[in-house]
Amino acid sequence: MTRDEVFNFSAGPSALPTEVLEIAGRDILNYGGTGTSVMEMSHRSKAFIQIHESTKDKLRRALSIPETHEILFLQGGASLQFSMIPLNLMKPDGAGRADYCVTGNFSNSAMKEAKKYGTVNIAATSEAEGHTYIPAQSELKLDPAADYFYYCANNTIYGTEWGYVPETGAVPICCDMSSDILSKPVDVSKFGLIYAGAQKNMAPAGLTVVIIDKSLAGHEMSFTPLMMSYQRMIDKDSMFNTPPCWCIYMLGLVLDWLEKQGGVSGMEKIKSEKAALLYDYLAESKLFRACARPDSRSDMNITFRTGNDELDAEFVKGATAKGFSNLKGHRIVGGMRASVYNAQPIEGVKALVEYMKNFEVAHNV
Ligand SMILES: *Cc1c(COP(=O)(O)O)cnc(C)c1O
Image (cartoon, rainbow, N blue to C red; front, side):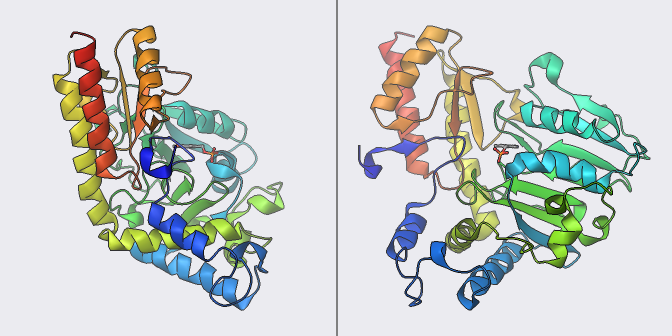
């Protein structure tokens, strides 16, 4: 198939804007008259330092990140943050405690990792309901003496998304925004730490963006690996070692593209429109139904099923043949999942809804 024939609904690594890939392709052998590719440059070179700094500036502007917070470009995926957060933010010697909300697979893994370093309080869990909803503020059991409060803003696998930022008093909030960062405005000042693996909504895999309130860094446990100290990375401007140069460059291009779409406010309008197209159809469909509770639905990962595994498989197979790729749900939940991140054009969602309607008619429902 050609790129024009495919609408890629991958949950991650996911679609990047075609325009961004075209610019990267155009400059791949010779970036800005340097005669070298960004992939071949020293990370200490003038050209790369300029890319690094401008990408940070663009991200700071896009999310209105206050000066109290530092931007870090790290590696190890979103998953390394499951360990870095407790290592750096919990009190040492097993005296640390933290609140975790378990609303899916990734927050569950993060919670288990934190248990290695201190006491974990489960502030809320949606496990008994198959992670189909987001707990309300009134359901959160908060520990006022916690070192931090942790949650995952968008549950990529289950298709649920927090519609509010929890109130935690003086306890700093750590948030995994891997799958909804840059899809809407956020008040960064409410957070102690935000992190996101880039491969969902920002750049190719290999980069993790961390936005950290500088006052929280510098208290890591004494045995924290060299590469896992936020303070060290802040001191070295993410260049303690070789950073993921190519991904940082790509993030810069994606941020230029984002600005042309009206920034995060523009993106919020577009993503709401895209999600409404799918959810409105799911509400009226007699064949498909949405998996998540209506008040907890994600605008990024839309999960649905027919209730019949064979029919689900037939739907996915037929969709793939028509160019709607990666619609199969995550293996731990089954069903279908349409990931509609920023780079998914509204035309892709409209075409998918048409395909679903035709499939429904063909199956006489
Ligand atoms: C994909 C994802 C992760 C895991 O990311 P890796 O970079 O593979 O470690 C963690 N949290 C969320 C919300 C995700 O969507």
